[in-house]
Amino acid sequence: MKEELPFREINEYPASINAPNMIVRMLDGLGFRFYWATEDLLLKDYAFPFSPDGKSIHDIVKHIWGLAYWMSIHVLHLQYKRPEDDYDLRKEILLIIQMLRDEFANMDETKLESIQIENQPFWHLINGPIEDAVSHTGQINVLRRIAGNPPIELNPFLGIAPK
Image 1: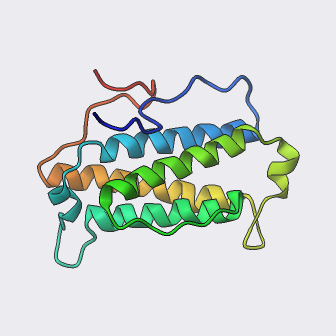
Image 2 (image 1 turned 90 degrees about the horizontal axis):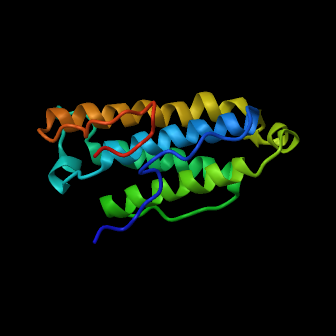
């Protein structure tokens, strides 16, 4: 039996529109997209290199872990040792995104405004690691299609698991 990981589906809409809830929804979208981009990947898929000097899916997932880890350090003040196993790496990324999501869900705007990322305003979290992770998740989908294991069809607008 497969372990249940977060972001198989996107939660209900937040009750109100405010800055912390916008971040929550961005993390929901990232988690959902990453979950399905990496769902049912085989070890051979993780190792697939598009070109001799290109990044493999494993390399991209490691980079996404680094982005999630960086956010964890600055927002949650938690540090981890990166797992080597591809499946454990995937699981930990999803769990870190879930912890970040929960932190922002319980945050008010005053606390959000006080967050500093390496002496830079909070905005660097959005246009840095969150958007970078979304972009790299798209790369995983492209590479898995080229490797012969196309992404699972889903509707990211609705955030529900495919049937």
